[in-house]
Amino acid sequence: MKYVTRGTLLLFTAALLACGKADTAPPPRPPVPVTVAEARRESAPLDLSAVGTVEAKSTVEVRSRVGGEVMRVHFDEGDEVRRGAVLFTIDPRPFQTTLAQAQARLARDRVLADNAARQAARYAELVAKDFVTKEQYDAAEAEARSQKANLAADEATVADARLQLSYATIHSPVDARAGALIVHAGNNVKANDDTLVVLHQMAPIDVRFPVPQQHLSEVRRRAAAGQLAVEVRDSGGVSRTGSLTFVDNTIDSQNGTIQLKATVDNADRSLWPGELVNVALRLGVEEAVVAPESAVQSGQQGDYVFVVKADQTVESRPVKVARNVGEDFVVIAEGLQGGETVVTDGQLRLVPGAKVAIKNSSGAAPAAVPAAAPGGAR
Image 1 (cartoon, one colour):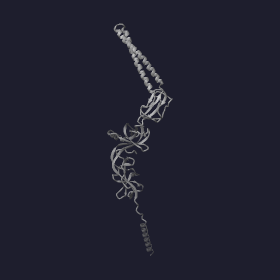
Image 2 (cartoon, one colour; image 1 turned 60 degrees about the horizontal axis):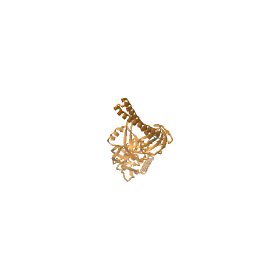
Image 3 (cartoon, one colour; image 1 turned 30 degrees about the vertical axis):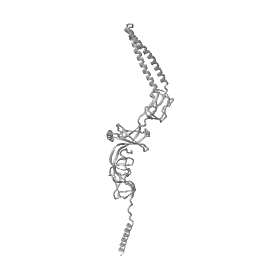
Image 4 (cartoon, helix red, strand yellow; image 1 turned 90 degrees about the vertical axis):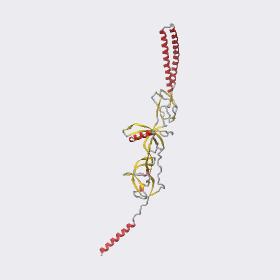
């Protein structure tokens, strides 16, 4: 009897526990609020991104061609100077004196040359009448030629003296921005020795940047077909468009890159020599699947996205990202099709199979960077 009572008690207890479990079962998880966007198949720019260095189109170290005292500086440090503008005046007085002496010798020898020429002409008449000997005529003719040669030498000396005097006034050879003044007024300089100031041509300006050597053949092929656009973005996020103007003739064997150069108008003088900038070289445009960069998550197995299915549940989909497009988009090489909806915000609360509630009113992603303009560098 005791055995039956104990068994009945155990059965009753198990039934109570089963009822308790049924009563305390957790309710279904509510949908996870997320923001979504649509992956699109569209024309996406094919860009090569790099970090470049701004370089002056030309850099000129201004030196004096003649020695002497710097009498005057005609500009302030940092000024924009035009081609042909006067920069420095070297003391011209020694060169003025030299020119005056050369001009005096020229005037004297011109008189002597005229006299020798007339003398030779008279002797030519006299020798024809046998009033002078042939030797006397030859001597007069030689003297005339000698004086003519002296006259030519004097004219060259005057021209050189005038040239040296012109060097005492130093002009800017380019439109450029002046750097720090190295030699001030009152200092003596030697010919072709001391650098007076360094000029940097600021507009247009060059940007030098490296690209991996495996892209060289593609760059050359597309450059031969037409001018390639380059976008330059400074540290402030301001972008400017230029064009590829130079491909180096040597690959750097240490890092496997080749140097390219783009030229940018830089009319506002905002790009500065030595500045580091982001560069995007536009090679062309191709059809690809484009999705917001915020949709791509990184895991131990690589990149993945959460794709929203028709029943409002999500699946985790591995993807392969090819490259960035513009500021906020990426090209998906594998894993997504155009028209699929991906989660762009709220992924931290998601697991495969979870139900979602879409927060944004439209599931469409904003348009990617237009193919007609270079995309942003990343």
